[in-house]
Amino acid sequence: MRKLTAMVLASTLALSSASFAFAAETTPATDAPMQSHGKMMDHKGPHHGNPFAELNLTEQQRTQMKALMKDSGPRVDRGEMKKQMDALHGLVANESFDEAKVKSQIDQITQAQSARMLERAKVENKMYNLLTPEQKKQFNENYQKRAEKMAEPRHHKADEAKPAA
Image: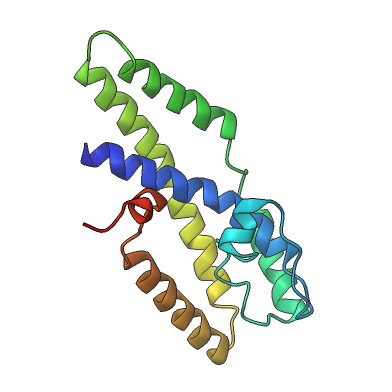
Protein backbone atom coordinates (compact mmCIF):
# COMPACT_ATOMS: atom_id res chain seq x y z
CA MET A 1 0.00 0.00 0.00
CA ARG A 2 2.91 2.37 0.71
CA LYS A 3 4.23 1.86 -2.81
CA LEU A 4 0.83 2.70 -4.24
CA THR A 5 0.63 5.85 -2.13
CA ALA A 6 4.16 6.81 -3.15
CA MET A 7 3.26 6.15 -6.77
CA VAL A 8 0.21 8.40 -6.61
CA LEU A 9 2.24 11.15 -4.94
CA ALA A 10 5.05 10.81 -7.46
CA SER A 11 2.62 10.91 -10.37
CA THR A 12 1.11 14.10 -8.97
CA LEU A 13 4.57 15.62 -8.80
CA ALA A 14 5.37 14.45 -12.31
CA LEU A 15 2.18 15.96 -13.69
CA SER A 16 2.91 19.23 -11.92
CA SER A 17 6.26 19.40 -13.69
CA ALA A 18 4.46 20.07 -16.94
CA SER A 19 2.58 22.99 -15.38
CA PHE A 20 5.88 24.16 -13.92
CA ALA A 21 7.36 24.36 -17.40
CA PHE A 22 4.46 26.43 -18.66
CA ALA A 23 4.51 28.66 -15.58
CA ALA A 24 8.21 29.37 -16.03
CA GLU A 25 7.53 30.39 -19.62
CA THR A 26 4.53 32.58 -18.83
CA THR A 27 5.64 34.43 -15.70
CA PRO A 28 4.90 38.11 -16.37
CA ALA A 29 7.65 40.73 -16.22
CA THR A 30 5.43 43.12 -14.24
CA ASP A 31 3.97 42.93 -10.78
CA ALA A 32 0.45 42.90 -12.25
CA PRO A 33 -1.62 39.98 -10.99
CA MET A 34 -2.08 37.12 -13.43
CA GLN A 35 -5.57 36.15 -14.44
CA SER A 36 -6.67 32.86 -12.97
CA HIS A 37 -7.98 30.01 -15.09
CA GLY A 38 -10.67 28.04 -13.35
CA LYS A 39 -11.39 27.03 -9.78
CA MET A 40 -8.12 25.19 -9.18
CA MET A 41 -6.11 28.30 -10.02
CA ASP A 42 -8.32 30.43 -7.76
CA HIS A 43 -7.79 28.01 -4.91
CA LYS A 44 -4.07 27.44 -5.27
CA GLY A 45 -3.05 30.84 -6.64
CA PRO A 46 -1.55 31.75 -9.99
CA HIS A 47 1.99 30.58 -9.17
CA HIS A 48 1.20 27.13 -7.79
CA GLY A 49 3.94 24.71 -8.81
CA ASN A 50 6.46 27.33 -9.96
CA PRO A 51 9.08 27.94 -7.25
CA PHE A 52 10.70 30.68 -9.35
CA ALA A 53 7.54 32.75 -9.92
CA GLU A 54 7.80 35.18 -7.01
CA LEU A 55 11.50 36.02 -7.33
CA ASN A 56 11.29 39.14 -9.53
CA LEU A 57 13.38 37.57 -12.26
CA THR A 58 15.13 39.77 -14.78
CA GLU A 59 14.30 39.42 -18.45
CA GLN A 60 17.70 37.77 -18.98
CA GLN A 61 17.03 35.22 -16.22
CA ARG A 62 13.60 34.44 -17.72
CA THR A 63 15.15 33.96 -21.15
CA GLN A 64 17.86 31.67 -19.76
CA MET A 65 15.32 29.64 -17.79
CA LYS A 66 13.10 29.25 -20.85
CA ALA A 67 16.12 27.98 -22.79
CA LEU A 68 16.95 25.48 -20.02
CA MET A 69 13.38 24.19 -20.01
CA LYS A 70 13.35 23.93 -23.81
CA ASP A 71 16.66 22.04 -23.83
CA SER A 72 15.64 19.72 -20.99
CA GLY A 73 14.36 17.09 -23.36
CA PRO A 74 10.97 15.94 -24.55
CA ARG A 75 7.86 16.89 -22.62
CA VAL A 76 6.06 14.35 -20.48
CA ASP A 77 4.20 11.86 -22.66
CA ARG A 78 0.81 11.99 -21.00
CA GLY A 79 -0.50 9.30 -23.33
CA GLU A 80 2.16 6.86 -22.11
CA MET A 81 1.50 7.81 -18.48
CA LYS A 82 -2.21 7.22 -18.99
CA LYS A 83 -1.55 3.80 -20.57
CA GLN A 84 0.58 2.81 -17.58
CA MET A 85 -2.03 3.98 -15.07
CA ASP A 86 -4.83 2.30 -17.06
CA ALA A 87 -2.83 -0.94 -17.03
CA LEU A 88 -2.48 -0.68 -13.25
CA HIS A 89 -6.18 0.06 -12.91
CA GLY A 90 -6.95 -3.00 -15.03
CA LEU A 91 -4.92 -5.15 -12.66
CA VAL A 92 -6.57 -3.65 -9.58
CA ALA A 93 -10.11 -3.88 -10.98
CA ASN A 94 -9.81 -7.58 -11.68
CA GLU A 95 -11.59 -10.54 -10.09
CA SER A 96 -8.27 -11.98 -8.94
CA PHE A 97 -5.21 -10.14 -7.70
CA ASP A 98 -1.90 -10.98 -9.39
CA GLU A 99 0.67 -9.46 -7.05
CA ALA A 100 3.59 -10.11 -9.39
CA LYS A 101 1.91 -8.31 -12.30
CA VAL A 102 0.86 -5.38 -10.09
CA LYS A 103 4.38 -5.09 -8.65
CA SER A 104 5.86 -5.19 -12.14
CA GLN A 105 3.48 -2.46 -13.34
CA ILE A 106 4.19 -0.30 -10.26
CA ASP A 107 7.94 -0.74 -10.82
CA GLN A 108 7.55 0.34 -14.45
CA ILE A 109 5.58 3.44 -13.45
CA THR A 110 8.02 4.26 -10.66
CA GLN A 111 11.06 4.00 -12.94
CA ALA A 112 9.49 6.38 -15.47
CA GLN A 113 8.55 8.85 -12.73
CA SER A 114 12.01 8.63 -11.20
CA ALA A 115 13.62 9.47 -14.54
CA ARG A 116 11.30 12.48 -14.98
CA MET A 117 11.97 13.71 -11.45
CA LEU A 118 15.73 13.39 -11.92
CA GLU A 119 15.61 15.41 -15.15
CA ARG A 120 13.46 18.06 -13.49
CA ALA A 121 15.86 18.29 -10.53
CA LYS A 122 18.82 18.79 -12.91
CA VAL A 123 17.03 21.62 -14.72
CA GLU A 124 15.85 23.25 -11.48
CA ASN A 125 19.43 23.17 -10.17
CA LYS A 126 20.64 24.97 -13.29
CA MET A 127 17.82 27.50 -12.90
CA TYR A 128 18.63 27.97 -9.21
CA ASN A 129 22.23 28.74 -10.11
CA LEU A 130 21.04 31.59 -12.35
CA LEU A 131 19.62 33.38 -9.31
CA THR A 132 21.26 36.22 -7.40
CA PRO A 133 22.16 35.60 -3.73
CA GLU A 134 19.05 37.55 -2.67
CA GLN A 135 16.83 35.52 -4.98
CA LYS A 136 18.37 32.27 -3.69
CA LYS A 137 17.57 33.36 -0.14
CA GLN A 138 13.96 34.14 -1.11
CA PHE A 139 13.71 30.86 -3.05
CA ASN A 140 14.79 28.90 0.05
CA GLU A 141 12.44 30.88 2.32
CA ASN A 142 9.54 30.18 -0.06
CA TYR A 143 10.45 26.48 -0.01
CA GLN A 144 10.36 26.46 3.80
CA LYS A 145 6.94 28.12 3.81
CA ARG A 146 5.57 25.56 1.33
CA ALA A 147 7.08 22.68 3.34
CA GLU A 148 5.50 23.95 6.56
CA LYS A 149 2.14 24.39 4.85
CA MET A 150 2.32 20.86 3.43
CA ALA A 151 3.05 19.51 6.91
CA GLU A 152 -0.14 21.05 8.30
CA PRO A 153 -3.00 18.59 8.71
CA ARG A 154 -5.77 18.99 6.17
CA HIS A 155 -9.34 19.40 7.29
CA HIS A 156 -12.04 18.16 4.98
CA LYS A 157 -15.35 19.93 4.58
CA ALA A 158 -17.17 16.75 5.64
CA ASP A 159 -15.38 16.98 9.00
CA GLU A 160 -16.40 20.64 9.38
CA ALA A 161 -20.06 19.82 8.69
CA LYS A 162 -20.29 17.38 11.61
CA PRO A 163 -21.86 18.87 14.73
CA ALA A 164 -19.67 19.03 17.83
CA ALA A 165 -20.50 16.33 20.36
